[in-house]
Length: 156
Image 1 (cartoon, rainbow, N blue to C red):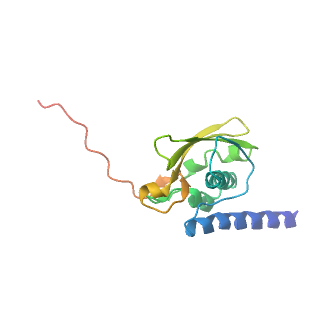
Image 2 (image 1 turned 90 degrees about the vertical axis):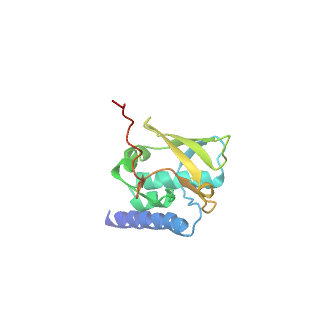
Image 3 (image 1 turned 180 degrees about the horizontal axis):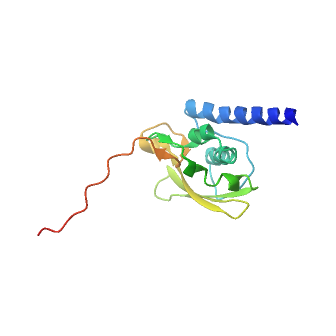
């Protein structure tokens, strides 16, 4: 039993490292994870979502950072793990819907095996002046901008 735990831990670390290495090399991470696909995503988009689901199921902060957009930089918070148990529940279905007016982003609907649903986005960072790599629109901005202007008030 101890050997199995060591092998599982090693596999998780190695797979997380693979996604992180893709992030650092400025390419789109691609992972192996069971996934039913609807729509016509590119191989890069499908691989990215597989990495997302694997990191989500493993509660892997580094893995989520590797698939998250970084323009602007983000941090992963507990809210990003809301569907962690759902991701472990079995085969998920990812439905990809391209944006007809902007080929650099797409909508993603995930239906988990337990029936839970999530709606996310995919974005090619080239739209932000970055490299042509796909990332998930997850995470919280590290340096959020100032709040908008104060609400207007009626003059006396």
